[in-house]
Amino acid sequence: MTAVSVGAGELDRPSTVVPPGERGATRIADRVVAKIASQAAREAVGTLPPDAGRPSATVAVHREVAHVRVHVELDYPCDVGARCRQVRRHVVERVGALVGMQVPEVVVQVERLHLVAGPGEGQGRTR
Image (cartoon, rainbow, N blue to C red; front, side, top):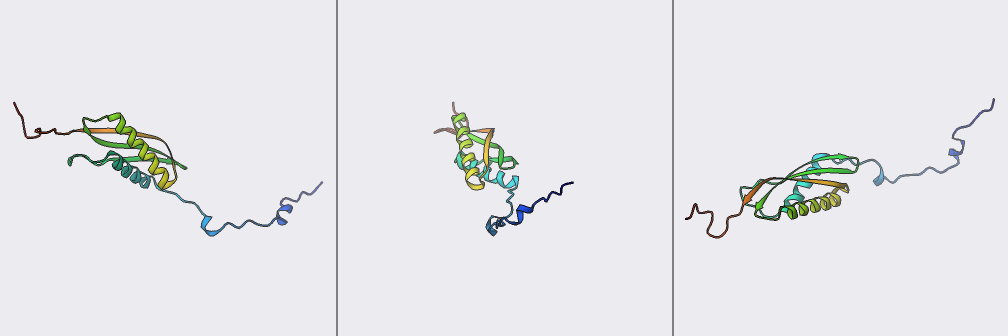
């Protein structure tokens, strides 16, 4: 019978020391990423009427990937598709820059459109 020494070569190898600043792990809660995504959506949407709700977001994080759903209200008339693309792009940029996560998808759900009153409108009915 032959005896096998496991790990004998391990003793000759110098051990690797990991600097203190590189030890451990960082876990960012879903709600933190959602708050960042909400703020990014607010920045992208811009100025809205006073009665408009603020954008909100829900996020599901798995490892270093965040799947984001953003709820927004927009002024009307506007190019809804272009505004949603702008929100998507900004959310991806901000989440990536601030928390270092990949964002493969941002679902933008338009909850409400706010009619922007033109000149002379908003004062009631006119004939």
